[in-house]
Image (tube, rainbow, N blue to C red; front, side, top):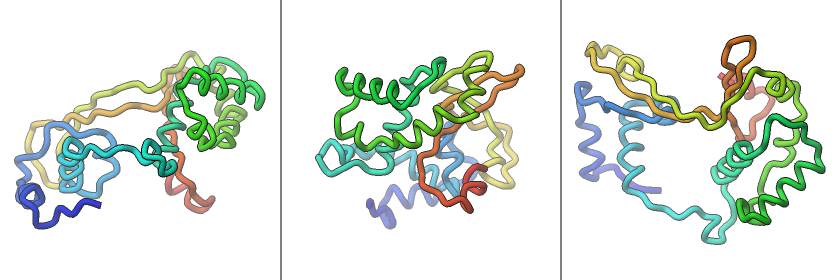
Length: 193
């Protein structure tokens, strides 16, 4: 954990005025931060911290790294075909052989979740769809008033991000955002929003 309070960077961030809103935020910063100060702090730290992932230091795989692995596998899998447990296991073995995944990473994958998705009615909808895209970058200009109540300026903020997956069904895009967090049934509805 990095202690910022009292540092010049922290004080600089706290003193920024509304008229100095950032011109660009990532979608993650925009959605997952409770305040503009947090978004600005994350933006500042992103370029300053160069931390090696724990699994590269033989410490085990964190939940964040599991999520990254899940996204990687979902990006690689061909959603135009039907998957069985056997064909999925063969594909995972092939990814290890081609050194896309390490054995340790393969073992850490949520194979139950992947198999569940690939056998779901939602996946059947994807296979019947008019087309799909994975990991699609987007740019969206928003009003600063969406992140800072009362802002009346005309300049917009560019929000950038990557859509995990979308497919076209009946002429409309259906977005899918992969989540690998463990949640209870009671929390599922709240988290889905």
